[in-house]
Image (tube, rainbow, N blue to C red; front, side, top):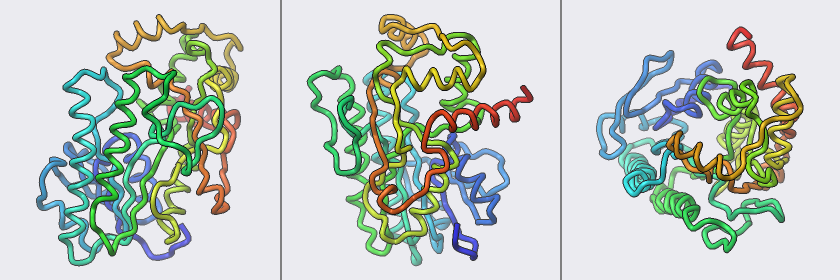
Length: 324
């Protein structure tokens, strides 16, 4: 960050992969970080507890803070049963509204509130890139009806965010693509495991687009948004170069120095696999061709705009972390 003075940064719902990436980075840069979570874990930064449903002592952490980053919400990597759908949606809407109430109560509210959203908010797209001016999804004739749930979650999430009355706090909705980092348990770690076991071929036709962002650029984009007061409203956090699933997996196989041919996964295999893994095929099959329109217009310089160089760096760092 260009700022010399340390910032007070609060991250609600910050014990997941993204929260850990941000907390670790800001802590290492000398900023005062507080992570507020249902199940706080022992860390080098300050931690506090909340239930993500009620105001409590955690509200005091926001008084005088410079930045609040809300990442709270139930993991979507599950089967979309009625119970899970209800919990996924409410966990986002309620926790976001709660953060808004907390900001209203403190004497010195944060200058900026970054709230998680998702690049899934846009319609499925093969024909053109989707920036912040593109149409929201939900009524695509060629998409399964079940995919409309993700759009409903995303739009409800953002409505709750922008409905919060916080006149002294700038608000940015982070429409984030898949964040790729070498950390254990993340999406990159999962995809690389498939490649290592010889299963890293294309999914279905392989023509669906994958939107992603390298963790280094994700952090740098967050820093830019915090620093720049002209950023408010929705912002796409994604690489400027989404690619097809076929190309995506091919680059990953080459970066791992394995066979250029990976075992493909037909739709029926993906459906069976999703059932066994208690997840949904939408996470693999929906074509997400999202681009960072506002970041590019701001002059943001991506260190890893292309997947080939990005996955080479990620594989190298993964090997260092795992002693491979």
